Amino acid sequence: MGFTYFDHNATTPLDERVLEAMLPFLREQYGNASSRHDMGITARRAIDQAREQVAALVNVRPPQVVFTSGGTEANNLFIKGAAEILKPSQIAVSAIEHPCVARPAEALARKGWAVRKLAVTRDGQVDLIDVGAALQARTGIVSVMTANNETGVIQPVAEIAARARTAKAWMHTDAVQALGKIVVDFEALNVHAMTLSAHKIYGPKGAGALIVDKRIELAPLLAGGGHEHGLRSGTENVPAIVGFGAAAELAASRLEAFSARVGKLRASVEQGLVQQGAVIFGDRAARVPNTSYFAFEGIDGETLIIELDKLGFGVAAGAACSSTNPEPSATLLAMSVTPEIARGAVRFSLGTANTAAEVDAFLMALRQVVVRLKNLTAMTV
Ligand code: PLP
Image (cartoon, rainbow, N blue to C red; front, side, top):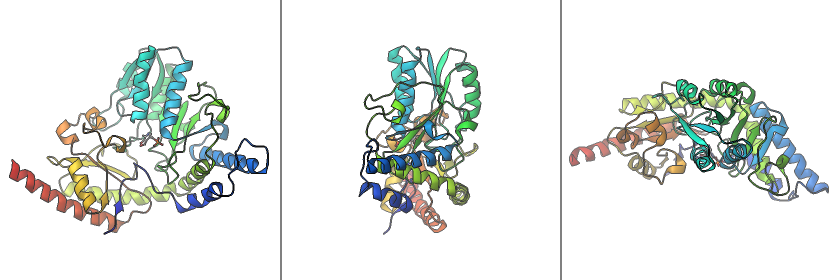
């Protein structure tokens, strides 16, 4: 039996073209980009090219791209790096941020910052009225993700950024789950900083970037040789950065086709889900086109994913990073979903290689599992 992967929000496979671009830098071109000889220069040029490719994808100038080890590091770099420079005031982050934004923000409480969580509506979007209320207090940092990793709901980042700027706060967005799925334009979003990750766009794991408006100053997390304009010391991971660049170029070139294709597939998945009696979270708001987050009342999400896994389908319960955590999804609770329903949550996320036949097979398997689990529940009640 084969395995069909529907968990692309957790990670994506490395695209063959990305691997091809990386291979020379894993084999013969192993130079240190700081070396002055030929091999060093080759490595430096490859990094420069990747910087241009990543910059082009999000509409910034190449010097604004600071390469990091991934999204987690970029989010930490912004929040801790900004807090180091600014005098303590309020940090406002949405109630549905990934833990790598939520945790560093919460940790600032120990440094004298007031930590404010921004409410979301039942549809899964940050509530602009609550943003207005929060910004009544003196605020140094605002961070709201571009699209949520669980629901896929696109957030009103530009609107929040306008309010943050009026309040003289620095505005950051974690665009990890939006990149490659919708247009992500740093200028249009009007933010001061933005987080990206390579492995969600068919690039390698362990590569990402913080995009920074040059008018703000951040303190680095790591002190050392002063790489990446002093913001991220450490010998550059050349193959991973090259892979990130290649993945960024690929993402830009296929964005429209990808979004149209997976959008159609998701529509057929959701039609099937609704027919089978599922509730779909966030479906009244604009979402990235590949994601569907659903639950069947009375059926535990964890049980559902285990049963689907046995039948050869890979989906996720809640956020991948918290899959060992039995608590219901904080994102769903923030959307006022009851804990009973939230415990049933399953995330289905499509990728470039998924087909209509795979979606049909998934819906058939799901029907089988849901009917069996419902009968079991009926017998035990
Ligand atoms: N931000 C969001 C919204 C994510 O979904 C993830 C990964 O799951 C990250 C950040 C972390 O990125 P990375 O895995 O590159 O550290």
